[in-house]
Length: 136
Image: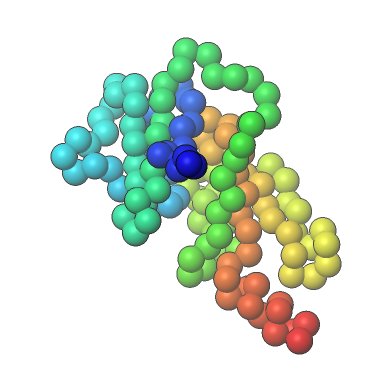
């Protein structure tokens, strides 16, 4: 027997605000029959294609320090830089730029959401394919 991941939970201080922010980043949606509202202590959003759910839960004192886990995002139809620019305009903060760390066309950018949760932006599938073609 095995288990499956029901959802990914993110502790926060304002579940509604952070779920709304991540909706704009990921294109996830709320449950139309039970929409999130300001003041809700639990706010889920889901990927309309895969059903993956992020559940934002308000906790009185989130664990301080480094995240125990983080999300790695891969742009669907933008370049890595275009996605970083979009997310910064959306309110993210770049914390570390690891591009080129392992040679040209490699690496990632670490950003923080409005509550300081870290996440990374990887290269897009098209960028990865272009580097692979150059190496062939």
